[in-house]
Image (cartoon, rainbow, N blue to C red):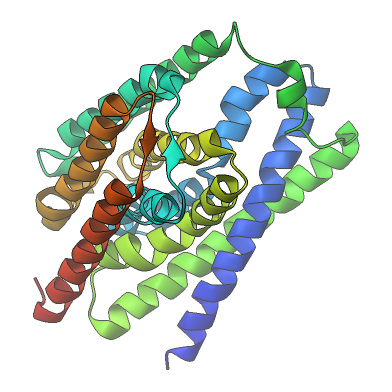
Length: 319
């Protein structure tokens, strides 16, 4: 009976997305009250928080013995963020490109994507691969913090931190963490049951249902920010989220359940992610003082739709 797994996935998504947002706020407030600078909080806790649902799902999936779901979530979220989120946003309204994004965040994303390809190339995601990706995560945080050091605004960062006393922040931190874990377990269980019932691999479920679900906040935020003319948020959110997906989400199976990776992740899914990332990078470099317009947006969206069609066909043929 599919009603229970479908309900588990739906409730898991709602709980995961609601608690992730509150968890980031509570973590930022706790760190601020403990004496961390607002700039450092903005570059670490708030930035990592954009990928909190993916990270928690990856941890739970790896611990539950379904690492392919975690790998699919990491790759699928990046594919959805560029093809679905940026594609649809650019179709609605062209997105102006800031040169600082091209100069600072884009090289890190390209480097992380290349390193992820190296980690997956031998068909095995092990501890060494995970530590290598985690090391680049540490470097990326340092680089972003250093690059932002001269321009960071205390007022801007303060606006991201809820006004909470330390005891209240700690209570929210603990409570939302419990809900995050419970929601992700519910989601992983439901997704695994659906995969088993339909004879679909956990990799495909991670690439589609879980990846699209965890990318919905980025889609809503990007469309809303573009319509409100907060254009820098749209591209910045996607690049930041994709960077952390590669360096904080993808290493989880290697750290917690090292072993072989589904061959389709290497032959089909990673190349799709690489293609979309390189296309985005090329357009940002070409239009570094222009905008990401409707034609690139349409192409990104078409590639994503074609990729989903390929996944559906592969699932039906058992490939």
